[in-house]
Amino acid sequence: MLTRCRYPERPDCWHVYFGDVHVGAITRRSGVPFDADQWGWICGFYPGSEPGEHLSGTAAIFEQARADFEPAWQRFSAKRTEADYRAWRDSRDWHARKYKMWAAGELLPSQKPNTMMRCPCGERFDSHDPAGSYVHRQHIYEAHAR
Image (cartoon, rainbow, N blue to C red; front, top):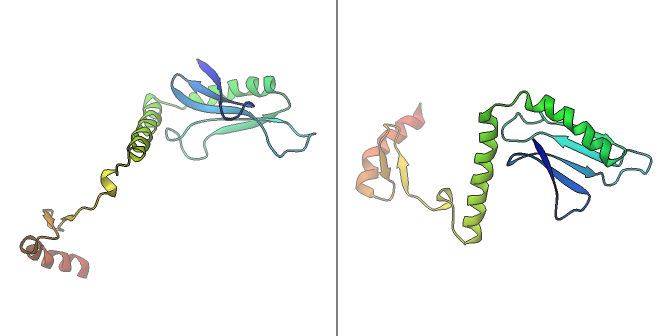
């Protein structure tokens, strides 16, 4: 079942949800001539679908845009699996954790300096440890020479 929620930062925009997954939007179009369709809609979500796989359209009035969204959602959702919805949820959750860490002034693990390396032979070693890195230096040179 689809639900619409007014977007708080823009009174002429509604986000459309399927459960907890944001699957589209219906909004007044900005910058279009007065004699053009004033409302637009977009149906789809990413990740969980291929880039550009969304459906979209325009309508003269909100009610028509809302009505046009329904069959587009039926077409789009017919191709989705539970794994697609899981991909979207995983991305949402990851980004929430990331922004929470940044707001707290923390770095992501990938942003922290790390001197550990993996040698072409498969062993991990500390590149700042002269004794340990010397052993693997020849492996690295050989790998780069290939």
